[in-house]
Image 1 (cartoon, rainbow, N blue to C red):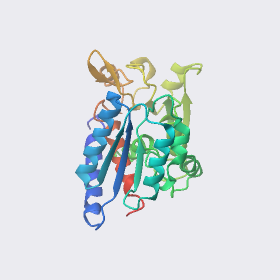
Image 2: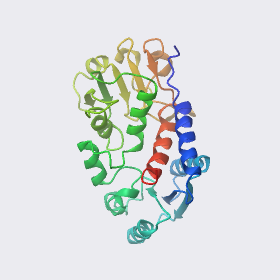
Image 3: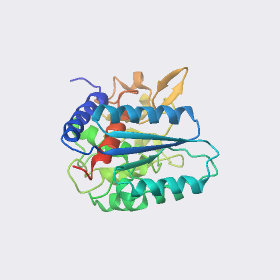
Image 4: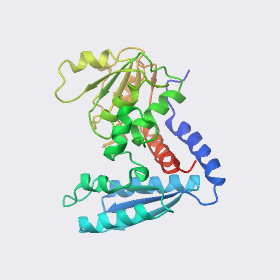
Length: 279
């Protein structure tokens, strides 16, 4: 059995399924992508999302604004999109310029169109296990990746290194649910965690989401563990993960590569969220 968990292949299967469903709809789902400023990384992410839309038949609209855009103008544009029946999803690419309050922006998006799953209503539904909400794309992508790879999660010790609102916290909330593909015992580690090495080595499934290149080395991995690398870092002109991939490979039972692991799943889940209330 190959040790590589091929996120790209699994994401392509999901996108083919989305495309088949979208094809049958007379009015295609619409995703509005809002980009404020000219951050190169943000522009790259938005382009990847547009490519995903094009591949599945979802109509994407990219709205680009200058860095100096007023917060009130952005909120007014979001309200217009909330009222637009042709728009099923609204995504405001983060980070925003410092003069715009990200919390206000997230609150302004209609929860049914909050494809990032960041609105407090969707976060609350996630914690309660209410499937009517929209889940954050990267954590949900990891859950689906584990399911599609037939990796048992129930009763396993999942250790997540990183407590961000985008990955760490929501992933813990999802995997501990009393639901199929979940039922894990979850530990979250962070910069203040004592005995990090021992906790990491106790993981059946270790998730690296700390944003530090090659942070997880072989000394942190239990032999036979499953390793999920969420990191996207640039080091020596290359994209690398939070895991020292080459050193980890002989130790793990399965591992996600970077690129080609979690990243494509994030896009697939975004497209799934866009269509959720249409299928």
